[in-house]
Structure formats: structure tokens, C-alpha cells
Image (cartoon, rainbow, N blue to C red; front, side, top):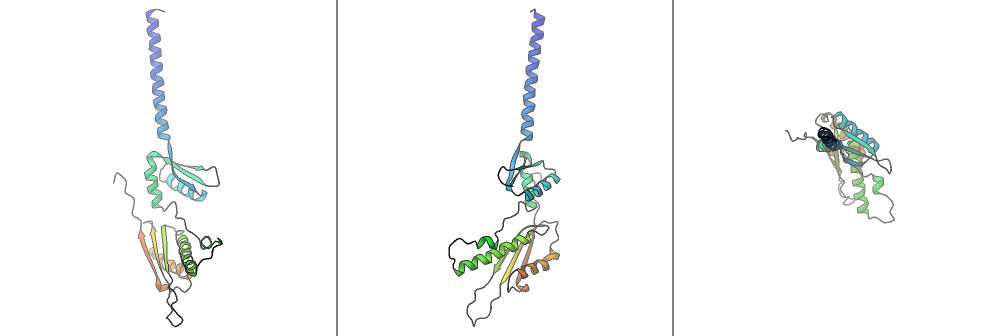
Length: 214
């Protein structure tokens, strides 16, 4: 092999190595850019679809993956979109709070409960079920219902009427003020002996999440 052939071969090898290095760098960049991290796991199919739809509408590159066991799903987003995705879903009240039902609270576990324990569980169960119903209203991010049912002090004592306080955090775009009478009526019809005038509804609009550029 003469000098010219040697130099030509050396140039070809050098070019090949440089091209390979560039290819490796590009491949690594693509892997980093395309890497997704888990946003939420153990979601129901319905809630996962709802959250995925919202993120895609907002321009977030999200992905829903079915879990191996059961009908639960996992939601994934790119690392760069993680914080923004959390903020978007939080503003929509997602994932939704989980509430216990009266049936779950009064499961037969073989233990005898005292009247006080039964009473506490009953009041708590009522508040949970009403709260769960209120969260189904369009625009409601989260809802809490606090019920007070006074003890009967004696036969000759005046009857103490129950009262209820309703806390609702809602999306700023929703107009819930006009629905306060219906909300009070729903709570009124859910609790025996509760007077309509003893129900207080407090509405709080959700504040938009500030981003790093704001």
C-alpha cells in the first residue's frame, strides 16, 4: 500500500468513526427527549382517559399504559412536562378525591360498636357521600361537607336541629353562585331533620397556578 492509499484509508476510517460518534450522540438525545416518567398510577380506566384527554388538549405529550393486574392504568408524561402536567390536572381537580361510603363504614367485622362509634361513623359516612355527589358537578374541583347532629339531652329538653357547612373549591370559569340554592336543597334532602336555613355554602374559586415564567 503506497502513501496515497494509506492516507485515503485513514481518512475513510476517521470519517466513519466521526459519523458513528455523531450517530450515538443523536441516539442518546432522542432517548432523553422521548423519555417519559410516571405521573399517576393505579387510576381507573375512566379517570385515566379523562386526564389523558385534558393533557393532550393542553399540548402535553402524555401516554396511558394499562397495568398488568386488574383494569387500572398509569399515566406518563415527558420529564420536561411533568410539573406543568401536575398543575393542569390539579386545576381540574384530578385525580379526584376518594370518599368512603356508608356501606363501607358499616361493614360487619364481627366487633360490637358502641352507640357513639355508630353515630360518628354514620355522620362521617353521610358527609363523605354528599361530598362525593357534589364533586360530580361540572367545575367543582373538591368539596367537603361538615355535618353537626347534636345529641338528644333528655325528653324534656328542646329538640336540637342539625346543621351543615359545605365547602366547595371550583374552577374559576365555572359559575356556581347561581347553583347555591340547588346545592343547599341537595344537602337538605340528604340529612334527616336538617333545616334548609341551617345549611351554609362557602364557594372558593381556584387560583391559576403560576409558572416559572410568570
